[in-house]
Image (tube, rainbow, N blue to C red):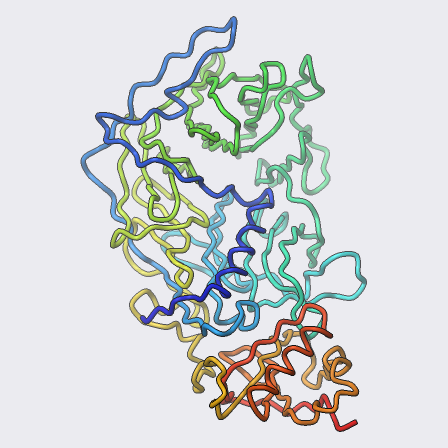
Amino acid sequence: MKKLALPLLLLLPLALAACKRGETEAHRDPAPPAPASAPPSAQAPSASALASSQPGSAPVAAPPPARIADTTVALHVVAEDVREVAEIVPWNQLPSDVPRPFYLHPLRDRVLVTLKGTSIYALADGKLTEEDGIPPYSLRLGASTSELPFMASDVDIVSIVGRWPSDVWIRVDGLFSDGARLNNFASPLYRKQGDRFVESPLPVAATAWTQGRTLVLSGDQFSLAQPGGADLPRRAAGAKCPVRVRAEAMAALPDGEVLVVGRDCDQSDRLAVERWAPGRADSAVIPLPTWDGKLLHAMVLATERDRYVVARFEAASALARIDVAEAGATAVPLSLPSSKPVTDASLAADGSLWILLGEGDGVELFRWNKEGVYTRATFPKGQGLSSTGMAAASADVVYLAGSTSNVRSVILSSRPGKLSFPSDAPGAAGPDAGVPAAQDAGAASAPPAALSSICASPFVILFAVSKSAPPDYDYPATRDALSGWADGSKYRFIEYSHRGQRMLGASAPDAARAEALAARLRERVKGASPAVACFSPAEVLREVRLASAP
């Protein structure tokens, strides 16, 4: 597969989009640079090893150093999406050409996979089954009474929480349209209500609970996604604040147990776990080791037999096991296998804990077992990864999604074999099949090339057309921008298909006039960012008369 280098102008909007994604609560903070991990005999200390005690409390013993097995677990590419990007085309002009990663969404009762578009797949036993996707028309922005159709070919569903498919919150990244032309990049948050999705903040957590109910934690208060008469867990009041443990994350189990990890206002904001035993409405607060530094992110992972807290601080990351006995529950600090920051973790039903540390070329993945031994996972061909989700099925099987470059996204797994997607989805052909078939459709013409004075076919790529726009859409905003312009009649405006995406563009008499049209539309059409190219579309859908001689 030939990989084209992306120019600076293409990378800049991608970087801005990535920054925007990082600002929302549903996306984890990017990992800061971290020193390389020391060998096991000279392991750099994690926050667990640096735990101290609160004044007046019993000292916290440092855990023994992490033990790392001599054996390894190999990761394999089980799905891949590689896209060739025309260098001169801005990223928001050709949605079907822009690489977007796979995303894994581990819910309590299933694992969902999303990729570019609004398709959703369930992953189980090494197989993918297609779920009902999210209809583009069900999404709208702001308080406008008119629907803003979603550009389904240029959208990521980057977060799904709750119980699928009835009680669902999602976060999406993509471009929204006024019916024809593309507007700004947005990252709206939605909650499903009936057949529609309405803008709504993401809760701290929402998950399948017990007796078919979905437990929701918003702020520091519990609720049910669907109203019911069941008793909810009661939050413990603090001596210094209305709710003692300010929630960072939650886990809820089928037997009714609930765990919330957060900062304990009665103990100088040290981390603690508030736990509700099965069938109990009142909780017990379990102090965690006093890990130093500013908290960036915390997770609580639980099955009916195993419970863990993973926390990331500015200077280090930390891990603790929650041991439950008849006399109560206690937290036991554990050493991490690397000094790199924890970026994700997943607990399998058999009690195996998979921990991802670092990002990019420095990424590391380990499996921890109950004997206290870590096993390192090896990445294919020494590739790095920027993670977009992880799901552990067992001690033998883990799935990890992410990007290895600006043009390549993958799903890795310790289970060999290729995931089978429907034939029209990225990754369907598998990692060895070259460009996915979906990209080849309608691609008989050469990709757009840079415009020069000797180009025989100067062209202006205006925008991708919304899938909800009618076949005879007349483009009023573009028409208004061209009204009264003497040169407007010198262009041939056409709708054409480029790799399955309906587009609007214009043939120009020469390179100078192509630049002139692009400049006029940038100035007069809000949000427009046309691109000039040397290009002759192979599949013209229709000619559109947008300008005439004044």
